[in-house]
Length: 80
Image (cartoon, rainbow, N blue to C red; front, side):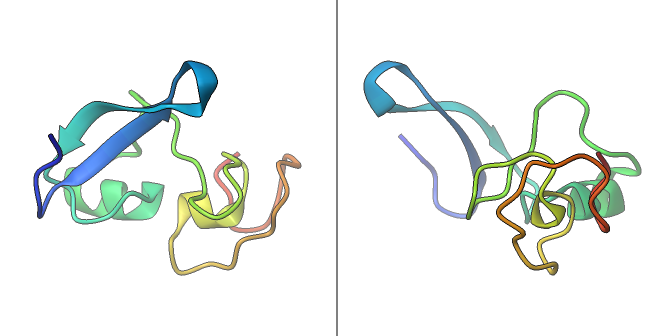
């Protein structure tokens, strides 16, 4: 069961079914907020853009950036 007030990390399983894999006390899902709160980027999970699902999208790095819809390496604003 998902708890209100926590960041729920969900992965998609077989048949598109969402599976709760982890709950976090972080206030935001993006890499920049994780770095701000913990002092480092999150290396234990892949953070993807909630709009396009790409890890190289600049919005996966910083929630304040626009979604590019692209997974192309080297995009401005992306850590990848």
